[in-house]
Figure 1 (cartoon, helix red, strand yellow):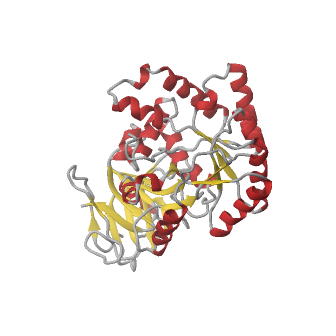
Figure 2 (cartoon, one colour; figure 1 turned 45 degrees about the vertical axis):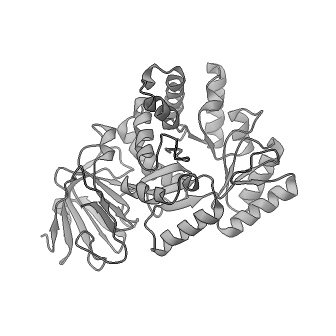
Length: 396
């Protein structure tokens, strides 16, 4: 039996998102009652098949029930959402974000696009710490964040958002200072020696953390993997590899459990902005072929927009959808991309026990879509509602 108030969401093209946090208006369910989305198709972020005619219930930000609607008893007094003809997916992860290059309005843009979690990969440590704290305190709307603080590099690196280290002692001190501050992991750029990377990895691992980043100059991606980088960003290191060297790199990644963060859309977006066709661009097509080969071999992928400067065409929120589309263009299935953008991203970031899937006990970070993303991955843009930690954010 269904009880309580009843809602049906249909997106109006010209409408913006209403985001209400402190005061609860007509567009936000009070957290004192359970919320039930019924008769919806659930794509849970883990299973390879959707669950049709399902009901998902959450209360006080936590999912309490998932299953066929006929089997779910909706609690008395619940607020109900008619999900008939709609699709429910977990909140999306953007695993390649640079908030401070763009500015604080990136936080709202991400939520509007259904991005409820991010991996912040380098910027102003004070600003990100402030925004992160405000989000966690509930005084600002924004995604959950895993963050790296500034880039760690050698003394010859550029200055912007860098923490430069000259020797082993400085490298170890930098890792401990950042981790003591609450940083989740260490990010490097390319201007750093292999010896210092090895020191950073060693010190981070001692503290239960890890290092990600670009391939240091003079090294191959396979060598960077063997130094202990947990993820490697961008496609540049692979484009000129022979097929034999590419296969050897894949085998090294598999051995070391190194994740690939391809950021394909950061190559595609400028081409689209010029009015050109990415399918005729040799670099894009070579990158696509490499990503597909790695994926088919079992190398885990991270899905991220690589948004940063405001004059870059990939933007907060929409850029993540562009990356998902680019991965489908590369040959991945929409289901594969959805899993990578939700549960696998949460796994990489140590958040599997909190979010990334539609499962009982996890946070109610959810996106309600008007059309089937498995039929066309671009349908992830057709958002009817976003639920962030059970708090409703909808198109009015």
